[in-house]
View 1 (tube, helix red, strand yellow):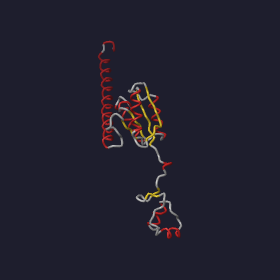
View 2 (cartoon, one colour):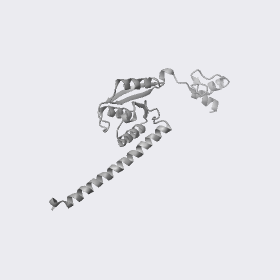
View 3 (cartoon, rainbow, N blue to C red):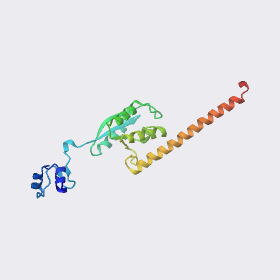
View 4 (spheres, rainbow, N blue to C red):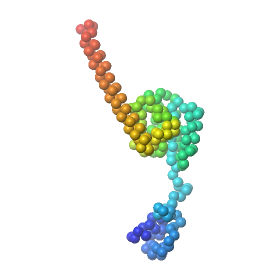
Length: 196
């Protein structure tokens, strides 16, 4: 198949050889084809919108309005999920956060918009887990208040890596602290006069 015939068939032209010869000298691309890309133009009715999940921890009316205006300012973004929690940021056992993770796992959202990064979690280990989980599901995380935090930008990816590294250091330090406390507890129990 010649490149011209291949381009016609990609753009929705006829696939028969006779029709291809007839259309060979037609310099106009088919009506449904973008001449620059030589691919069928997207039908505006089938345009894909970006499905956005909004997540807030301890939400206020001002923050909710700010997130809504941020999403409205982005072309083709539509809110697919609103979720919030009134619990502590030190745990992952929050119903709103679990709804966000379930939506990410099922592919119901493409972007998660938060006000600040600490709305996801107050502990770096949990934050690193959440960011890795969302990234592995193809969900982009964007902070409306911190414009530098976007997991699709090089700087945003750098921040994710820094948070992950800090979480690893924090976890290793916590393990060492636990070992030291256990060792100290055993040593003090051995030296106790009541241990005898």
